[in-house]
Image (cartoon, rainbow, N blue to C red; front, top):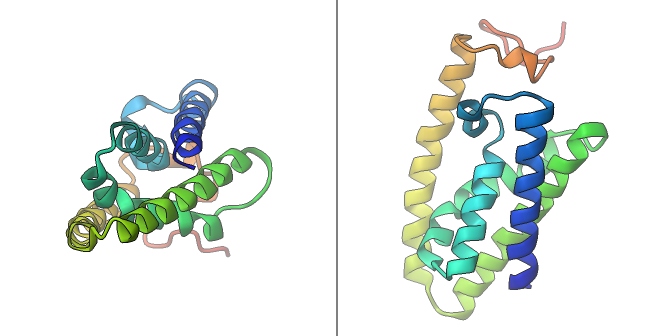
Length: 156
């Protein structure tokens, strides 16, 4: 299972990164805001390959938020199918990390990593929302249904 997660995290993050950077012409500095799943999968790849469980415990809330929750908020068709595969893989990585921590009795390390990762996740999501709502960058080019101003994703 670990080998599968290592290889598939690398392959899907590279595919999504190439798709966003080359085909969608997303600037590299906007990749972490627009599609943080690519960066998370690379961190997951590094953590699984090196065996750094503390890094994996730390990114566990990010994997859950962007991976598992992303399954329910993104469409399952067209160009988004690649990203849904990423979400499925992040959910599998989440389950693997959690189960391996329980089996190894690393409950305290897991708890510390989850608390620290959750704090950073809250800070990251709040800055991300402020960046998108402020309208400083043209995110509408990548997500046409996104609207600026006081209303976001509200259909008329």
